[in-house]
Image 1 (spheres, rainbow, N blue to C red):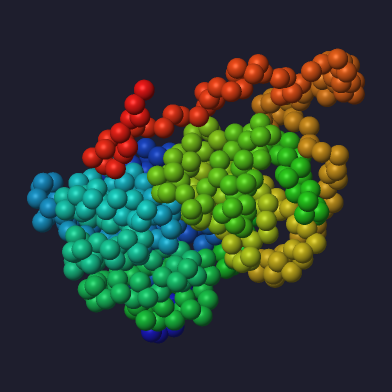
Image 2: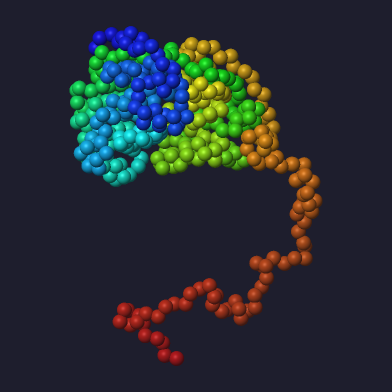
Length: 474
């Protein structure tokens, strides 16, 4: 592979608005329906490159609109081949978008479906954790754009329910994440099914050695598009680190939610068990909280995410399964209850807020043992974040905030009033009655003692044929 050229050497002068792009009116109408007018930096630079048919390596901060940066030009290139025929043969898979997680695949599919709503182009999404039968039925009807996770796509390839021989565009979204979770062998197997003449687009948060090696193997003379320094965090996100003892993280979390009036937030933890446990604790505190992690079925995860988007859940306690692919409009903030094991996950976690130019708040609760992890984060983002002290009461749970603060809805119970309502009779020590006779010491009549107890079942009579004895003569 030749050295990647810069996008500025091939692209024309950047346009600022979608209406200035050379896109089909049906695509522009779909964009207008979604309320988008101005292009983001990654869209300004990537869309002309994809329209020109060049391979591309793209790097951008999370939440900058890179899904539209590759979806819109791909749909534009596919429209001349679009067909209104009902025959599946007229709708082969022409564009393949691979995503590392189910949530990200579902998010990308929603965008593809929205952008193509006014065109005859069909789209489908396949990922694990769900029944293959409905996915197979959708594939057999014919789709031009297929969004998939690598594992489930291989299942369909082995079952011969999908044909990739006519693919013209391949997108590797979040390629660094796919390599982190061990999808490289699956990627290699999938790419072997594809035609050699195709346009390949690779998007990654980092251009590590492994990513560049992958690009050298499967991309031809790619254009490199970088709109921000790799691993840079969005300037619209305020980052705060609070130093708290490990045993006070729970009350510290409640205090942070109250002090910053976070009406809706994602709380990230490092373990699945910790996510479920913290969600239950927050529910006992009166918050509408749910957990989201890999142990839950895909249907449960989608239902939880949908409830969170509808503001039916105040706090979403999640592992890093939610660090990528979740696009929550105007999410006010995220909280790192646990400092992530991988510094790059910090960038993706806080990227859930402050999206598309909006302001956001990212708070991290760190204890003494998190010093090394914080140092790695600061080294990665090339920014020093001075930890702040957070005074947390050790006397018990933090008092709940009033309803209008946005943190929970359960009023504080007056402990003093409950203590005054106690009956002093229950505080007296036990005084036995010397004249009382215990029931178990009462003597039963002699006749009752000689009789067979009612609790003893009588001996059953057995027929002589089966070895029983004949009844005694009376």
